[in-house]
Image 1 (cartoon, rainbow, N blue to C red):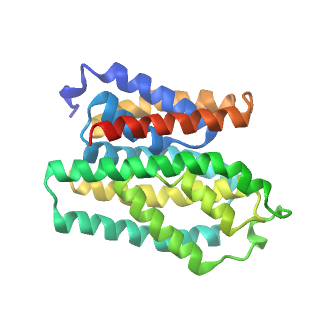
Image 2: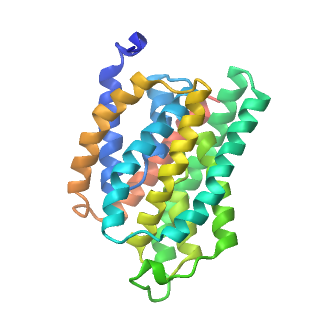
Length: 267
Protein backbone atom coordinates (compact mmCIF):
# COMPACT_ATOMS: atom_id res chain seq x y z
CA UNK A 1 0.00 0.00 0.00
CA UNK A 2 1.26 3.47 -0.88
CA UNK A 3 2.39 5.63 2.05
CA UNK A 4 0.02 8.61 1.91
CA UNK A 5 2.37 10.70 4.08
CA UNK A 6 4.62 11.04 1.02
CA UNK A 7 1.96 12.60 -1.21
CA UNK A 8 2.96 16.18 -0.43
CA UNK A 9 6.70 15.61 -0.83
CA UNK A 10 6.88 13.17 -3.75
CA UNK A 11 7.91 15.88 -6.27
CA UNK A 12 10.84 16.80 -4.01
CA UNK A 13 11.83 13.14 -3.66
CA UNK A 14 11.65 12.53 -7.43
CA UNK A 15 13.67 15.66 -8.26
CA UNK A 16 16.21 14.93 -5.52
CA UNK A 17 16.48 11.34 -6.70
CA UNK A 18 17.09 12.56 -10.25
CA UNK A 19 19.90 14.92 -9.15
CA UNK A 20 21.57 12.25 -7.01
CA UNK A 21 21.18 9.68 -9.78
CA UNK A 22 22.68 12.12 -12.28
CA UNK A 23 25.74 12.65 -10.06
CA UNK A 24 26.08 8.91 -9.47
CA UNK A 25 25.87 8.28 -13.21
CA UNK A 26 28.60 10.84 -13.94
CA UNK A 27 31.00 10.01 -11.11
CA UNK A 28 30.13 6.48 -9.94
CA UNK A 29 30.03 7.77 -6.35
CA UNK A 30 27.31 9.07 -4.10
CA UNK A 31 24.36 6.66 -3.97
CA UNK A 32 24.59 6.39 -0.19
CA UNK A 33 26.75 9.44 0.45
CA UNK A 34 24.23 11.82 -1.12
CA UNK A 35 20.87 10.07 -0.91
CA UNK A 36 20.71 9.41 2.83
CA UNK A 37 21.65 13.00 3.86
CA UNK A 38 19.15 14.32 1.30
CA UNK A 39 16.34 12.20 2.74
CA UNK A 40 17.16 13.26 6.30
CA UNK A 41 17.84 16.98 5.86
CA UNK A 42 15.61 17.92 2.92
CA UNK A 43 12.69 15.48 3.03
CA UNK A 44 12.58 15.01 6.80
CA UNK A 45 12.75 11.20 6.77
CA UNK A 46 13.80 9.58 10.06
CA UNK A 47 17.50 8.54 9.96
CA UNK A 48 16.81 4.84 10.51
CA UNK A 49 14.20 4.82 7.74
CA UNK A 50 16.47 6.80 5.40
CA UNK A 51 19.39 4.40 5.89
CA UNK A 52 17.29 1.25 5.49
CA UNK A 53 15.51 2.49 2.37
CA UNK A 54 18.71 3.81 0.81
CA UNK A 55 20.48 0.48 1.28
CA UNK A 56 17.85 -1.33 -0.80
CA UNK A 57 17.98 1.55 -3.29
CA UNK A 58 21.77 1.13 -3.56
CA UNK A 59 21.51 -2.64 -4.01
CA UNK A 60 19.14 -2.22 -6.97
CA UNK A 61 21.09 0.59 -8.68
CA UNK A 62 24.47 -1.13 -8.19
CA UNK A 63 23.06 -4.43 -9.45
CA UNK A 64 22.14 -2.68 -12.71
CA UNK A 65 25.79 -1.63 -13.11
CA UNK A 66 27.31 -4.94 -11.97
CA UNK A 67 26.43 -6.99 -15.07
CA UNK A 68 28.07 -4.61 -17.57
CA UNK A 69 31.24 -4.54 -15.45
CA UNK A 70 31.26 -8.35 -15.42
CA UNK A 71 30.73 -8.49 -19.19
CA UNK A 72 33.61 -6.05 -19.74
CA UNK A 73 35.92 -8.17 -17.57
CA UNK A 74 36.28 -5.53 -14.87
CA UNK A 75 35.70 -7.83 -11.89
CA UNK A 76 38.18 -9.80 -9.79
CA UNK A 77 35.78 -12.38 -8.39
CA UNK A 78 38.28 -13.79 -5.87
CA UNK A 79 38.65 -10.31 -4.43
CA UNK A 80 34.86 -9.92 -4.34
CA UNK A 81 34.65 -13.20 -2.45
CA UNK A 82 37.13 -12.12 0.23
CA UNK A 83 35.50 -8.71 0.58
CA UNK A 84 32.07 -10.30 0.96
CA UNK A 85 33.47 -12.87 3.42
CA UNK A 86 34.17 -9.92 5.69
CA UNK A 87 31.43 -7.45 4.82
CA UNK A 88 28.40 -9.75 4.99
CA UNK A 89 29.24 -11.08 8.49
CA UNK A 90 30.21 -7.51 9.48
CA UNK A 91 26.83 -6.29 8.30
CA UNK A 92 25.00 -9.09 10.10
CA UNK A 93 26.97 -8.37 13.28
CA UNK A 94 26.06 -4.68 13.14
CA UNK A 95 22.40 -5.55 12.56
CA UNK A 96 22.59 -7.93 15.52
CA UNK A 97 24.04 -5.22 17.74
CA UNK A 98 21.31 -2.78 16.72
CA UNK A 99 18.65 -5.41 17.41
CA UNK A 100 20.20 -6.49 20.73
CA UNK A 101 20.67 -3.03 22.22
CA UNK A 102 17.46 -1.76 20.60
CA UNK A 103 18.21 1.91 21.31
CA UNK A 104 15.30 4.31 21.58
CA UNK A 105 14.37 6.30 18.49
CA UNK A 106 16.06 9.52 19.59
CA UNK A 107 19.32 7.80 20.56
CA UNK A 108 19.38 5.79 17.35
CA UNK A 109 18.77 8.89 15.24
CA UNK A 110 21.60 10.72 17.00
CA UNK A 111 23.98 7.76 16.55
CA UNK A 112 23.23 7.49 12.84
CA UNK A 113 23.65 11.24 12.29
CA UNK A 114 27.00 11.28 14.09
CA UNK A 115 28.21 8.24 12.12
CA UNK A 116 26.95 9.78 8.89
CA UNK A 117 28.85 13.03 9.47
CA UNK A 118 32.08 11.08 10.03
CA UNK A 119 31.47 8.83 6.99
CA UNK A 120 30.67 11.81 4.74
CA UNK A 121 33.84 13.65 5.74
CA UNK A 122 35.90 10.48 5.16
CA UNK A 123 34.23 10.02 1.77
CA UNK A 124 34.97 13.60 0.71
CA UNK A 125 38.62 13.21 1.71
CA UNK A 126 38.79 9.88 -0.15
CA UNK A 127 37.40 11.48 -3.32
CA UNK A 128 40.02 14.25 -3.25
CA UNK A 129 42.92 11.92 -2.35
CA UNK A 130 42.07 9.24 -4.92
CA UNK A 131 43.79 10.89 -7.96
CA UNK A 132 47.01 11.30 -5.98
CA UNK A 133 46.88 7.68 -4.85
CA UNK A 134 46.45 6.46 -8.42
CA UNK A 135 49.15 8.79 -9.74
CA UNK A 136 51.70 7.19 -7.42
CA UNK A 137 50.86 3.64 -8.49
CA UNK A 138 53.34 1.42 -10.34
CA UNK A 139 52.53 0.18 -13.83
CA UNK A 140 49.13 -1.50 -13.89
CA UNK A 141 48.17 -4.91 -15.20
CA UNK A 142 45.24 -5.29 -17.63
CA UNK A 143 44.15 -8.70 -16.33
CA UNK A 144 42.25 -8.45 -13.00
CA UNK A 145 42.58 -12.19 -12.31
CA UNK A 146 46.38 -12.07 -12.52
CA UNK A 147 46.58 -9.91 -9.37
CA UNK A 148 47.05 -12.06 -6.23
CA UNK A 149 44.48 -11.39 -3.51
CA UNK A 150 45.80 -10.09 -0.18
CA UNK A 151 43.39 -12.17 1.84
CA UNK A 152 43.66 -10.83 5.40
CA UNK A 153 43.73 -7.08 4.55
CA UNK A 154 40.86 -7.58 2.08
CA UNK A 155 38.86 -9.50 4.68
CA UNK A 156 39.45 -6.76 7.28
CA UNK A 157 38.42 -4.08 4.77
CA UNK A 158 35.21 -6.04 4.15
CA UNK A 159 34.42 -6.21 7.87
CA UNK A 160 34.95 -2.47 8.29
CA UNK A 161 32.87 -1.61 5.22
CA UNK A 162 30.10 -3.99 6.29
CA UNK A 163 29.82 -2.27 9.67
CA UNK A 164 29.98 1.30 8.33
CA UNK A 165 27.61 0.74 5.42
CA UNK A 166 25.01 -1.05 7.56
CA UNK A 167 24.95 1.79 10.08
CA UNK A 168 25.13 4.75 7.67
CA UNK A 169 24.65 3.42 4.07
CA UNK A 170 27.84 5.38 3.24
CA UNK A 171 31.31 4.06 2.40
CA UNK A 172 30.93 1.23 -0.12
CA UNK A 173 31.91 3.53 -3.01
CA UNK A 174 34.42 6.29 -2.29
CA UNK A 175 36.11 4.80 0.77
CA UNK A 176 36.13 1.26 -0.60
CA UNK A 177 37.75 2.17 -3.92
CA UNK A 178 40.49 4.29 -2.31
CA UNK A 179 41.48 1.52 0.15
CA UNK A 180 41.39 -1.07 -2.63
CA UNK A 181 43.72 1.15 -4.65
CA UNK A 182 46.18 1.17 -1.75
CA UNK A 183 45.90 -2.61 -1.37
CA UNK A 184 46.09 -3.36 -5.10
CA UNK A 185 48.12 -0.58 -6.77
CA UNK A 186 48.73 -2.58 -9.97
CA UNK A 187 45.04 -3.15 -10.69
CA UNK A 188 43.54 -0.83 -13.31
CA UNK A 189 41.08 1.79 -12.05
CA UNK A 190 38.12 0.41 -13.95
CA UNK A 191 38.85 -3.06 -12.53
CA UNK A 192 38.92 -1.61 -9.01
CA UNK A 193 35.61 0.19 -9.58
CA UNK A 194 33.98 -2.86 -11.17
CA UNK A 195 35.11 -5.10 -8.30
CA UNK A 196 33.90 -2.58 -5.72
CA UNK A 197 30.49 -2.20 -7.39
CA UNK A 198 29.92 -5.96 -7.63
CA UNK A 199 30.92 -6.42 -3.98
CA UNK A 200 28.52 -3.66 -2.92
CA UNK A 201 25.53 -5.58 -4.31
CA UNK A 202 25.44 -8.41 -1.72
CA UNK A 203 26.57 -6.04 1.04
CA UNK A 204 23.80 -3.48 0.48
CA UNK A 205 21.23 -6.21 -0.20
CA UNK A 206 21.96 -8.05 3.07
CA UNK A 207 22.07 -4.76 4.99
CA UNK A 208 18.89 -3.53 3.35
CA UNK A 209 16.98 -6.74 3.99
CA UNK A 210 18.17 -6.66 7.59
CA UNK A 211 16.80 -3.15 8.02
CA UNK A 212 13.60 -4.23 6.25
CA UNK A 213 13.12 -7.02 8.80
CA UNK A 214 13.53 -4.40 11.56
CA UNK A 215 10.89 -2.15 10.01
CA UNK A 216 13.42 0.45 8.86
CA UNK A 217 12.38 0.53 5.20
CA UNK A 218 9.66 2.41 3.34
CA UNK A 219 8.89 0.64 0.05
CA UNK A 220 6.76 3.54 -1.24
CA UNK A 221 9.70 5.88 -0.70
CA UNK A 222 11.98 3.38 -2.48
CA UNK A 223 9.68 3.30 -5.52
CA UNK A 224 9.57 7.11 -5.74
CA UNK A 225 13.37 7.32 -5.44
CA UNK A 226 13.84 4.82 -8.25
CA UNK A 227 11.36 6.72 -10.45
CA UNK A 228 13.55 9.82 -10.19
CA UNK A 229 17.03 8.37 -9.96
CA UNK A 230 17.01 5.80 -12.77
CA UNK A 231 16.53 8.44 -15.52
CA UNK A 232 19.16 10.58 -13.74
CA UNK A 233 21.65 7.70 -13.73
CA UNK A 234 20.99 7.02 -17.43
CA UNK A 235 21.55 10.69 -18.35
CA UNK A 236 24.59 11.09 -16.12
CA UNK A 237 26.18 7.96 -17.57
CA UNK A 238 25.87 9.41 -21.06
CA UNK A 239 27.64 12.59 -19.98
CA UNK A 240 30.53 10.84 -18.27
CA UNK A 241 33.79 12.38 -19.45
CA UNK A 242 32.18 15.59 -20.70
CA UNK A 243 33.32 17.55 -17.64
CA UNK A 244 36.87 17.58 -16.22
CA UNK A 245 37.39 14.83 -13.66
CA UNK A 246 39.10 17.28 -11.28
CA UNK A 247 36.05 19.59 -11.35
CA UNK A 248 33.64 16.71 -10.69
CA UNK A 249 35.66 15.40 -7.75
CA UNK A 250 35.99 18.81 -6.11
CA UNK A 251 32.29 19.53 -6.63
CA UNK A 252 31.28 16.16 -5.18
CA UNK A 253 33.60 16.60 -2.18
CA UNK A 254 32.09 20.03 -1.50
CA UNK A 255 28.57 18.60 -1.71
CA UNK A 256 29.46 15.82 0.73
CA UNK A 257 31.00 18.30 3.19
CA UNK A 258 27.90 20.50 2.89
CA UNK A 259 25.70 17.48 3.61
CA UNK A 260 27.86 16.66 6.65
CA UNK A 261 27.52 20.25 7.88
CA UNK A 262 23.74 20.17 7.49
CA UNK A 263 23.53 16.90 9.40
CA UNK A 264 25.81 18.17 12.16
CA UNK A 265 23.37 21.03 12.78
CA UNK A 266 20.62 18.48 13.48
CA UNK A 267 22.56 16.40 16.03
